[in-house]
Length: 165
Image (tube, rainbow, N blue to C red; front, side):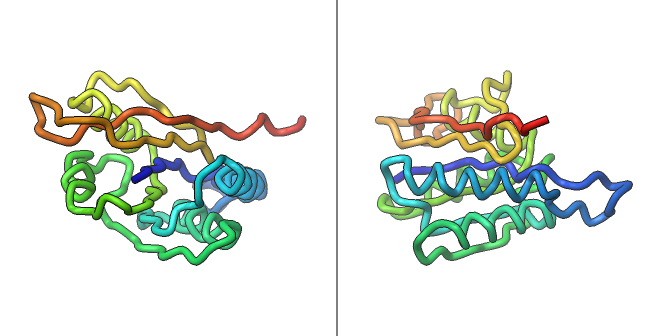
């Protein structure tokens, strides 16, 4: 099983559009991320959970469109920036071992979730994802003593190249 934690692409400011859709740069960065996932040596995710916010939904949709495979998209109300990362950790324990999942969300939630899965506690935060960046985790042996959650380890990380000026 691989778990990809993906931060949404760059979005318009609330002053530009209160719904905060992806910007042109954000869409371009997500397409680059999809290309990275296709060529990274393992299959693109077959399942993507995404936050209810428009920028995350658009990111998930673009990733699915450019994945080269059939992808199931599932909105999850508890993937907001301030959501409890333990809820997702509990859901991950219910997935089959061959699940191939990406989660498209926000900071600080994704950093807290990654830290919880890798270290057993959500704080202090050890990870921060760039916009249109991904942190790929894979299961490790055992569980964390304090939390009881399964152990995960970092497989790789990607951040989009800086935008041309």
